[in-house]
Image 1: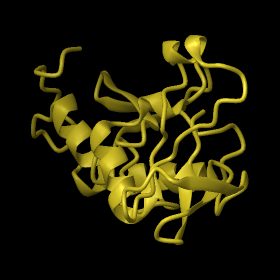
Image 2: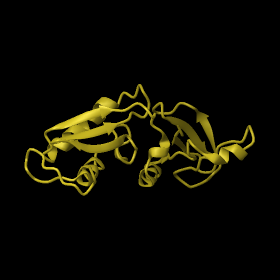
Image 3: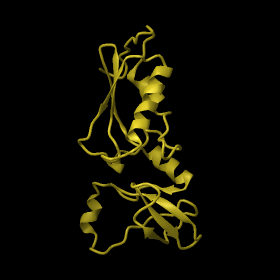
Length: 177
């Protein structure tokens, strides 16, 4: 079904998939509330099957403890807008990747003090890098490229802890995966 095709939910007001994407774009990630589940790339698809809205989500990793909260938040957003018939589908393949994050989402992360992924998962430039080349992560606080990894384990499994050598502030880096 195309984005322009309205479908009447039980409330009888035509709703497009574009409207639903917009509503879901306001659902915050429970671990990083400044970024939406759409900007994060967790919402993979929105379609209609008859009068039921089908939302397909992919967890950031298979054991992500936030997925139940994310699904509940999506359901609440749909119900708030009069969508009472919906199906939540979890799609594990292909696996989620930081490549699915929107550019707006990456800017929101940076504004929140979390360095966004510094490269793409599928990055052809890696073919020309020498072994031992260090990933450059820009400090979200001062913009310096003089940073170093303090720990591969940050506040959540998808982040690493970095420190800026110029402003001396620690910050999370959203790991590329």
